[in-house]
Image (cartoon, rainbow, N blue to C red; front, side):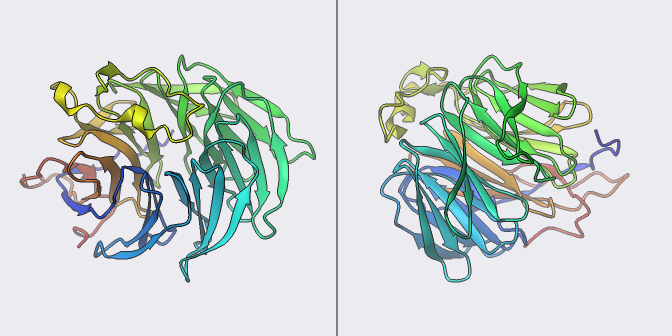
Length: 372
């Protein structure tokens, strides 16, 4: 783990991106941090100018809710997955669809690019992981072995491994250096479905689960370094800060349709968003938007963002670590908000600003001042 202590927390401001027509399932920044990508239940992919919040594009094409989105590391492409069983590859410069990848038999829940942007991994309800060649759209490999649906995937920074997380409560790490990949590690320890994965720049792997915990692993030794506890329901999204000192996590509110989260939606229902519909008539004091920021050295929660939104679906840091964006759902407003990080000076107390319901205090990461 990194021995340098995180910076002082400072109060930030919130900007809303509120033109979605459905819940925000996923969000991603372009490598240069200038563009924010969001995937929505309304079947569209949205592109936003990060600084101004201006909507750049709203792209249709999927015939079902868009579940996940990801930029390629070179910034030239982005990918989106959907309940319509397809992955779409899009050109960033022209904002147009280049390829539609077909091969999954059921909803595609995750997609990730290799660090060199030449390969793409996808997984979904059919329990399969597929490895694609981006340029030709050919399937390079089928990775079979998970006993339940695959909802997360992530290439290692070194490109030689692919981590996948499944609702069979395991994480499998596939060796991509061999002709026929085999699982050379299976990380076990969660007692619930694996919902999200994220590698740090140094090669640590974080996993979020329906068991309400986050695990941070050292994959090379299969060591569990930290277990983070604090979410009241399952963890939907996790992201490391660029320097690896912090981890942000997003989670669901307590009650959906009068039941505590913990029962999977029916996988035979292609468009299963209705299973997660929030029941506003049964509001509980703890039913609120929650994003947590953790110290990766100590495993302690540094800050919890609480608000009136029902669901926190996704969270991601900008490449410079100064901005944290959280995708959310609300009965009246379906929106993404960004928490702006102010400069934190040592030996000084940051000013107490009126944060509003969704403001978050985060370390400055070397910022010279607030982002406008």
